[in-house]
Amino acid sequence: MPRNINYLIAILLILPLILSCSHQSSVLEQVLESGELTVLTRNAATTYYEGADGKPTGMEYDLFKGFSDKLGVKLKVITTANVTEILEQLADGEAHFAAAGLTITRARETWVHFTQPYQEITQQLVFRLGNAKPKDLEQLDGRLEILANSSHAENLRTLKQKYPNLSWVENDEDESEELLTSVAERVIDYTIADSNEVALNQRYYPELKVAFDVTKPEYLAWAFPKSQDTSLYQAAVEYFQDLKITGRMDQIIERHYGHLGEFDYVGTRIFIRHIKERLPNYRDLFQQAAADNQMDWRLLAAMAYQESHWNPSAVSPTGVRGMMMLTKTTAHELGVKERSDATESINGGARYIKKLLDRVPEEITSPDRIWMGVAAYNFGYGHLSDARHITRMRKGDPNYWLDVKESLPLLRKRAWYQKTKHGYARGNEAARYVENIRQYYDILVWITEQEKPPTPPGLQALNIVIPAL
Image 1 (cartoon, rainbow, N blue to C red):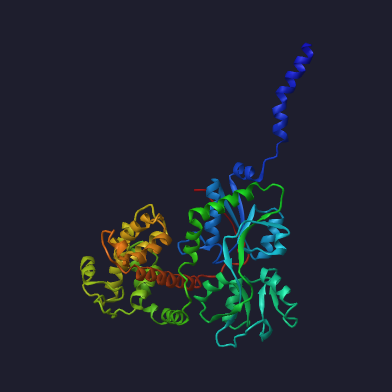
Image 2: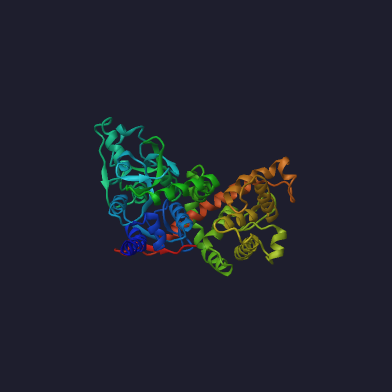
């Protein structure tokens, strides 16, 4: 009997050890235990890139950085040259998931697991202004080049049954943005790109035109390896549900696309011409004034263009004048004696926007605090405070530009402005003012980034680790 008791006790003592050894940690548990989440993405304006401040940005970045922060782990970002490599590396287990502006397609669904979609796009045929606009794929007269192994190629293979004479070249070296550049520079005649990529690139190449939509609306989503272990996938599904319920998803989309609006071909062409012809005369002034006030000179230049089109002698019907369109009162407070003097106006305007930005509450983070400061430059800090107050009354978040922007037009409505401290204001004009500056700023950033030396060969694929917040 004692021997049996001892045997039983021994079993009870080692049983927990046996069970613990036999337990296989889930993918989610492995991520939490290692403290690191690995994601595959593309280096592109619609996904992930280095912003003007030297920090990572992009819509996909905002999404997967938010996911890693929610899990409380650091983020390892792997960028690869194209979609094909991303899907291959995902299949090889080199990352936990891919967040690269991937379109959900039937072919891809056979071997990757997509989350619910977070953005709707269409595939668009793009040509250059000045060339004949085709009405359909049968009327193409020239070289059509597209991303290799992309959803665009998959769709064209299906459409070839309807258009048997359709032909194209699949490029396995360039990204979509480079193909759009090739169309603008007449290297190729056509390409197919997602509508969000087209909208972003038309600001830099206004000659790009959309002939027609090649597909009905399609959807972008994250891709996970197909596996019996769906723990991390389910965590991502819950994360996107939270983004939708809280309105954070709309805020992220607005941050990256909300300022685009309807494409203005003429205005963009004029702006690019003025960058070449007028900006060189004042660039040093913008750079010095911005450095003195700890801001990006391109933001200051974008504001000046919105105000005066870089004309130091500009005068408005209301009496504001100069490069930065300062009122007499504001100029006096800033010590600006001659508003039509470019140096004085730029320095004064820089000090004024810095003063406004310093008043924006610390809990408002960039870029939202920047756009709120810019709005205050247009119609006064008091009215900005009123707009944030209305946003609270409407159950929005007064710390997000998207929510505040939606409240701005209400400052013209008696039912709302009579509830505020500073009363009536043309809030809709302030909203448009900010969106214009955002577009000018983006174009200036893009053009000045082209001045940097190209990335040396071998440094195109990056592995970057970003700590958890």
